[in-house]
Amino acid sequence: PYVGTIYAINSNQAVSLMDRAKPYKYLYNVFMRRALLSAARDKGIIPEMDMARVPEGWTPGMWFMYAEQNGYFVVDSFKEGTKGLSTGKLVSNMGQVGNRTYDLRNGDAVIMNLNAAKLAKEEMAEVIGITPQRMGDIGNRETLGGVEHSIQRSSFVTEEWFALHDNTKIRVMELLLEVAQEAWRGEKRRFEHIDDGLASTVFEIDGNELADSEFGIYLSDSSSDGQLVQTIQQLAHAAMQNDQANLPDLIGVMQE
Image 1 (tube, rainbow, N blue to C red):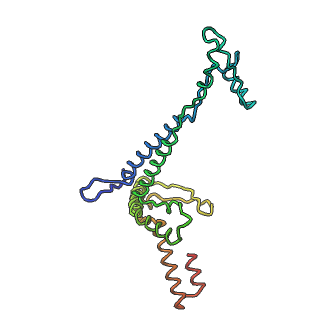
Image 2: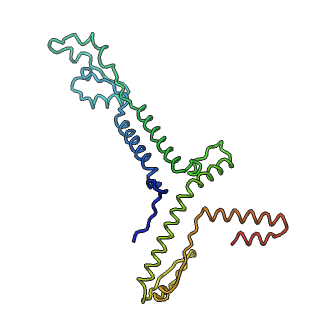
């Protein structure tokens, strides 16, 4: 059997949380891909190399290695000027070649695409309802009340999604329990359970008794539990002020 939830209102098309975030995720991938390609095309500033200046018998690798070790280039200005019709002509042209550079930097395109990807990510979080404060991104000038208010607003937006998911989980568990009641009828099963204290317990389930029993499933969530704890704390504080409760009673309520 299949269990799911179609998020639709009346006759409108069903739109899930993934459907809302998917366009921004595609847009984010596009800009990140462009940023990577732009970074790969960034070669920096490349100087022009005049092979006529390399000393006779040297390779370009030897020439650069010597310059790196000693801190200067060795130049043979007359190497090509001693051959054929070029004899004596290179001396007057030495200042015109070998001093140019080519700017192959592409940093602006990288930064532009990264900023666009960041904007797409922020828009996706806003559509979903997740604020930066809820993700832990808190500025040094934000107040405690402002941060709590932002987190609370974000929880109101996403509470509906969590409620739908919890409802789906309850129906899945109910169906799983019904399948187990029919599948284990007439059998006895032994299971091992490890509790929160890491203590192992072995118990046996009678299939007939399981099939003839009725069960109810209650699913709690952190949002509802937090609201309940906050309400209890407020009532306990009011009871202390009105002398309707003492300190041991308050401690007992908090422990439970």
